[in-house]
Image (cartoon, rainbow, N blue to C red; front, top):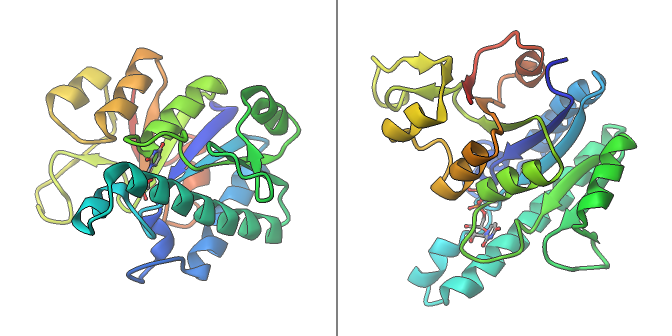
Length: 234
Ligand code: UDP
């Protein structure tokens, strides 16, 4: 196996499935099965989940809520998603721990780096909720930062498309997919793979990113085995 310890980034929106808001239980089950399949390969799995299906800080200002307040609301949304995912993973027979960037003792553990690593070594899936616990960041940045902290081998960014394209493949029929890119190329071409904070953290710490289609059954496993398409940025 090329990667022994991974951070899987899932957006909150991906949990909506075909809905407009919230959590689609079918998506949870589907993701839990995908994750179970790679766990069986012996890979150590940490997950960062977004909150965009429930709340985003940028929405707040339009609603007359102060940005920082909105960001905390967004972070709490990621904990709700984390709890839902934890539950689905446990139903699939996996051992999990939810660790939060904001203390909420009755619900989950606080994020403690050494403890997170220990959970992974023991075969538990660690879900990082509440982002990094600070406003003005995103869960993409959380994925990059946590991956560096726990010395993961790669960040896998699950999306609806199977990689990074020359143009938006949902709009431009001539768009072609990159199989691999350097950080520099991605930056120069303005490819918007992650926000700049997240992207730069990966670049500066030589942490590769793989963008892949999380919704295609079996694909996560194939990506990890190096059998499937996706775009590798390194
Ligand atoms: N957020 C934050 N700090 C963090 C992570 C998240 O303030 O470290 C807030 C931010 O408002 C963001 C929201 O939580 O809009 C939800 O996260 P994100 O937008 O990254 O979720 P995704 O787009 O992946 O669903």
